[in-house]
Image 1 (tube, rainbow, N blue to C red):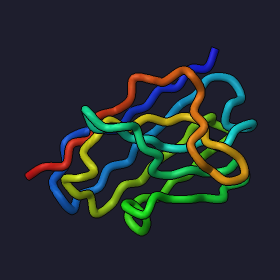
Image 2: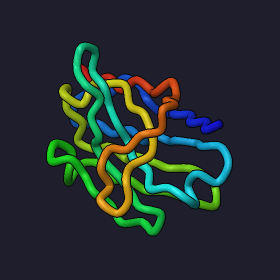
Image 3: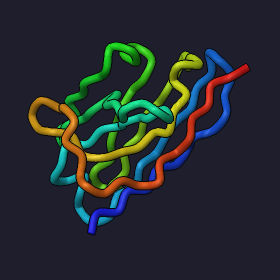
Length: 121
């Protein structure tokens, strides 16, 4: 069974930075393109960034230039460096699969617990 564990969230002031991490079971990162999704209560979950096995990336327009996705396949870990954070980035962030080669949303049925990011002064 797929296991995804997100961490690194917290409370940060506008303009601040956070680095999220995603650890996965097995050889998921060697096989699948992966991405970061986020969800605000009452809204649909949205894909914010995706990365192929080889390291090619794609970003939602709302985060492009501020967020950087990366992965370490050997460590089965993925990261999301978030800079210049805005209040509208407040959400629960999840990692999951994305499609290849287009890096669109294609999550597994299973979701981890997510990590809360709150941007507020």
